[in-house]
Image (tube, rainbow, N blue to C red; front, side, top):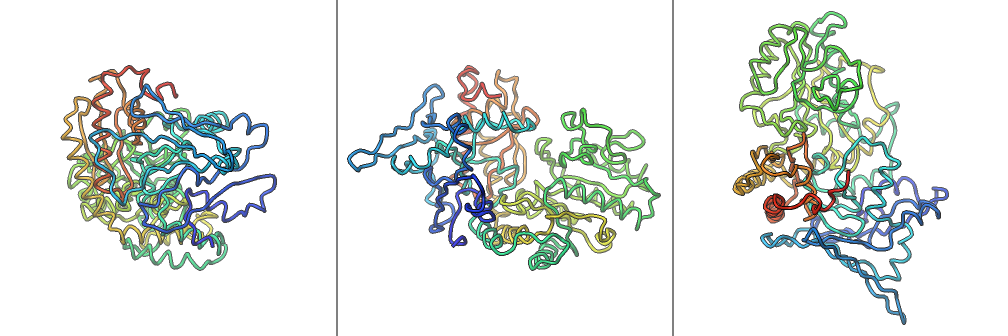
Length: 558
């Protein structure tokens, strides 16, 4: 039965593995949805809510919300959801007013997910109100009990489908961040969901202490898909980067003959490869490094000579390898620097770096965790320059956003430098991850998402540039990985405040490096949806310069 159900949230996985009856002192309410209808038209409704575990009677009374409030197009006005109790056997319905689109917005296409329908009748809804809490309560609980290692926009995801997400009050948004490019295939893609549910009900975990039916098939599929001999499976992007660094060092000692403990792995200034200790040792971002030393030696953009490797500067790379190439095992690069602000290097840079690496017997490691898997208009961002790296790192959209899956790919002369017992992960290569990843990669090809990203990315950049807003100094990117650079001196408003107003009008994006807004919607977005997003951007850029900061919805959230 599970395979025939369409989840409204990825929480279905947890329910699949742990039937309700097996969890003590915990109550759930969950109404699944049938999979009938096309993917994008199959939007969940507010009433069909997979609720979280009951919090307990006392706590629940403190956090339960009995009324939902949704903002309309005017920041100064709100509309309360109306609800009436059932009388004489007739139940009235509770309606949530969706955000009205700007007047210039193109109508949503038929294939797009419709706005959430009215909530279930009051009598039926009364059963589930005890386990539903408001967005404000969710944010309060998160701030109170969750570590403060993120600064999220004040929006709570309750359900997600395609390019759309809904908050607990039923308000619909377009997701233009895609979980940092993890949901390239769209939220809860039915083919990937089915693969997850089917495999979870069969065998979810074996560990690599034993063989499982899925890993061998997955390893062959991955190797052939990307043109390598072998794959080393991991879970998160940071794990995969650490794996690649270990692999490159081991190759440097075993194959290149670098003296013990002298191997260098170079990266470029402005890089972002993750948050673990080895990776932040490579970072030049003070927020990532300060207070976490001492750092891993011989990694990063700083050469032993004191020379800093500049991203996009081939002369800087040439100098570094000429001075230190003897001890350099690898160069680790993002084909496009993502967290730094979507920096696209000059044309020919990657190819020239690859040639220099070959000359000095240095491995080129491509971190395609964010840029890969069709995001930039090619299967890999390296494909723009026909560069085949020695080591490839993948993650994020490798699972379509449904499960943590990452991978390191290389040929045998590199990969077999690591022997049994020298590296691994309990969950790496588990059958559930393998099944999900194969389905996610199938979707990329079947729906031609790279070609789609290429075409729609050009459309997005062209339309935003045509706005000629004095607040926008630059629009850059490739495919559907784009950045809009904001001139915060042109008004007294920040990129963060712009994102708050975008959110109010139903579009979700987030700043990176203070004044740069990243726009990276799921690749399944339609032209009409993209145009609607641009219309919202235009509306915000026109309205915000004359607004008071206190009038921007969410301005008090920190």
